[in-house]
View 1: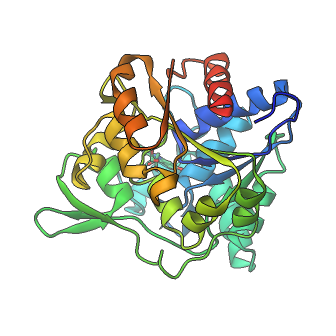
View 2: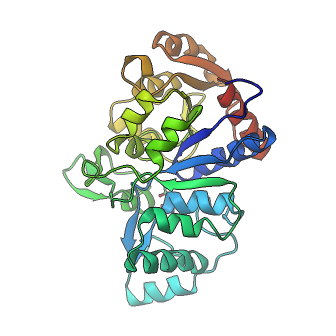
Length: 322
Ligand code: FO1
């Protein structure tokens, strides 16, 4: 990336980690007078519940960029109430372990209504993006409905959200599946944005259930393989541990060790059929740099804690320079 030409940037993102990183990327790009980034968000853990369509990762990014997110809980709207949820529970509707906030339900109702009227997911996300100035272009990974199912060691199968929120990832998974993904196509604009980008950034989101589904949409890997952009990933592992969530359980299930080097190897070097040109490794994992370099991926050691927006912006700036 030339220092004088502001880069065109695409971010591939999941929910909470993706949102934090995107806040930083937005600030970093604003400081460079660069065009707004295109953020391609995972829709693999979307679901229908109580008659409404939920898009947890889209909403996490939307609320965070719009300044509406509950920063303590990590999901949903700040200052939300749960009156409708209490009614749903009283009716025995929905899932007793899954809370739908009143303000959040407004989003789900709006989205479901637009979908029922025939809008595509891309059109719905575009409409949702107009309420608050987001400072990025938000795209779903695909307009096709895709699920994430968890296949358990005992042969049972459940929706990812049940495994994640009800069981807190405590049931040992054998595999993650995305029924419908083979038939899906990238949402309009996704492949074009990647092709036209100078830098594609993989947010430090869950490699298995957030970035994984985006990369599994047919056409996305091909777009990453052929783009003239540099593809730079940020490790979601710091000091040999996952930063948030239960991504380590997901990694173990697919046979990937919870380490910065192993996740880099999982994504692979673009020069040998993978997706990465460079990989940001935490200072705590600096000793992983040599093995990442040996994979043909340029390792860049940097502070990776996204404690606040300036820290996330510094991280995004490092990623843009990598
Ligand atoms: N996460 C929870 O841990 N408990 C919940 O009750 C819950 C409700 C919920 C409702 C709407 C929504 O968009 C997200 C919600 N989440 C909840 C977060 C979500 O389950 C996960 O954190 C993400 O899907 C993982 O990326």
